[in-house]
Every structure is written in C-alpha cells, then in structure tokens.
Amino acid sequence: MSAPPSGSDTRRLHAWAYLSRVAEPPAAGIARLVDDIGLEDAASAIRSRTVPPAHRAVLTSTAARYETDCAAEDLRTLDRLGGRLVTPDDEEWPGWALHALQTADTAARGGPPLALWVRGPARLADLADAAVAVVGSRASTAYGTRMASTVAAGAVERGRAVVSGGAYGIDGAAHRRALADAGTTVAVLACGLDIDYPTDHGALFAEIARTGAVVSEYAPGTTAARHRFLARNRLVVALSAAVVVVEAGRRSGANNTAAWARIVGRPLGAVPGPATSAMSVGCHALIADGYAHLVDSAAAVERLVAPDGGGVPENPRTVVDDLDPVVARVREAIPASGRATVAEIAFSAGVDTATTRSALATLDMHGLVDGDGSGWALARARPTRTSDGGDRRPRLF
Image 1: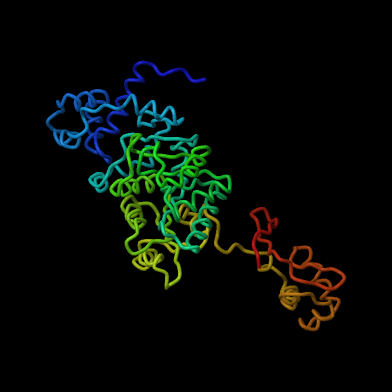
Image 2: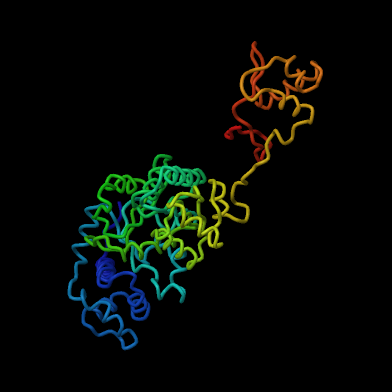
C-alpha cells in the first residue's frame, strides 16, 4: 500500500489542479510562468495578480477564473472516479511524447498540457512511443467501421496501444476492437473525466478505464465544446507514434487531427475508400496532396510506425514461392474448388503419374493440399515462411 502524500506533495497537487482550471487549455503562458518561478509561486502569483512583468499576458488569460479555486473539490471528484492527476513531476508523465508540442511552431497554437487527468491503469509514458492513433468521421460508413476495426486489430496484434477521441463512428469502432482483442486503448476527451460525452459512450469509457486509460487536460465538470475538441486533437497526435485517418469528409474534424500530425511530425496515413463516398473525400485529398501514406492493411500501418524494418512485410515470402517447378505445375493443376484424382491432375499438369504422386506428397508435407479417398484439393491456408525456417498458416488463398 502506497504511503499517503506528504503536506508538500498535497500542496503541489493542489497547485497543479488550480492551474489546470484557471485558464482555458492550452495554456502555454502558465507553463512558461511555472518554468520561470516554480509551481507554487506561479499559482500564488496568479491568485494575487502579481506575476513578473514578462508574464503579464497570463493576467488576461486567467482573469475570468483566478478567484475561483476548485482544486480540492476537483481532486475529491477525481478520487471518487478512481483517477489520478498526472503532472510533469511524475515518472508517468509522457514528457518525450509531448516534447513536440513545445517547439516554437506548435507552442503558439497549443503547447503541451499543464497536467493530465487520468482514469485507468495504463501508464502514459509507457504507451505513447508505440501507440497508433485511429481517427475519422463520426458519421462513419460500414466500410469505415470495418477498416477502423482492421487497423486497431493490427495495432493490438503487434502489442501497440490504440489512441482515439472516444467519439461516435471511427473512434468508437477503434476503441471497441482494441478492447475485444484484449488490447490497450486510450480515449482522449474534450471534457472532464466525470462527464460522458457522448452520453451513450459511458459504458465504453468505463471499460476503457478498466484496462487502459481515459485522459483529459480539462478539470472535472468541464463540458465539451467545439474549441476543446480541436485542442484535444493535438494530444491524440502527441500521445501516438503514428496517426491513421480512416474516413474523413471534406470538412471533417479528422482533418484537423491530420494537420496536427504534420505540424508535430508524426507519420500520417489515410485509408482510401470508394470514389463515390463523401466520407472518403478527406482521406483521398490527404493521399493525393502527398500529406499521408496510403494505408490498406495492418502491415501498412506498421510501416508507418516502424519504417526502418520493424514492421511486417506486406508480401512475406511463401512456401509456394520456393516450390520446385514441377511440383508447382502439379499444384496449379488442382482445381480451385472440388477435388481431382491423381490421374486427372497428372493429365492437366502434363506430368506422369509417379511424378504427380511424388509432387502431391511434397505439397501435402507443406500443408498446401488435402487428400482423401475421393481425390486431392487445395488446402484453405497458405503457409508463410517464418524467420526460423518453419511454417505458419494464417494467410488465406
């Protein structure tokens, strides 16, 4: 059992909670003030309106809220939710992942969060370096939902977390598939952790919090708003190693997330869709303009995350590729459906019966054919060569 926080720790936590709410995130000005004069002195200076001259802009950003200190109440709400406030003081703080938000180009548009309100056991610092963000339209099509599920499943299979925004459509499909495959998923919200938005996703957020993490830079009680969704998008990107847009209309919010991927420098992929689908216009534009790599498989996603060889090759070499030419001819002579006798296969391949029997034995050894008393048929799975020279059989013909 962990020791209770000391008085100093409690004061610091209250200071972080106060600063988290006193200005509308992102609050780069407050972050600079904390860096210059320290956490507790920054909170005190904002309350007393005595900030150093170089930080006078903070007085404007905090003017509406500086007199209202809800830190104690917010922390009680967080405790009731079973959550925690993760700050730059903590080992869990994903500092490296958030570093890209500190650059000059991004700080003006929205620097890193002051602190993160978190529900769930997943440690943020352990997830971000290998996570995949899956985003897209709320009004997703059946095709988009299926592709979001495919991308999420591929990420989970490779031990990666799936990050998204908890919204309807593509976000929800990605979260649910990650959960269904016993993977880790992170939902980044544009409201306080005590608010289920959308309302219908309350049970989904609870399940995510059971094994993964629900994250927000907004204090409890903060309601969702359009500008908060746009600010939230930068965190979805920053907490991921790559971003995949599955469906996006011409004016989809997913395009904003894609823009953040380019700004922050995260690899960006987009899933193409039917030429007639309005929900794929945004993805097609990202690909056509050269901003995004075309993603058509889980392997393509992996190449985004690990372009230097960590990914799985799209077309791994198969046992079929290495067959003796005569054996390959015998295999090609077997009908695609149904069964054929040795004599029928030999006639079709133009090979004598004895050679055909020998070839069938070789094919059977590799699991490429299925023989019984009525004849021979192609097996349903094609083995792929593993690194140790063995075979595995997950790929279909």
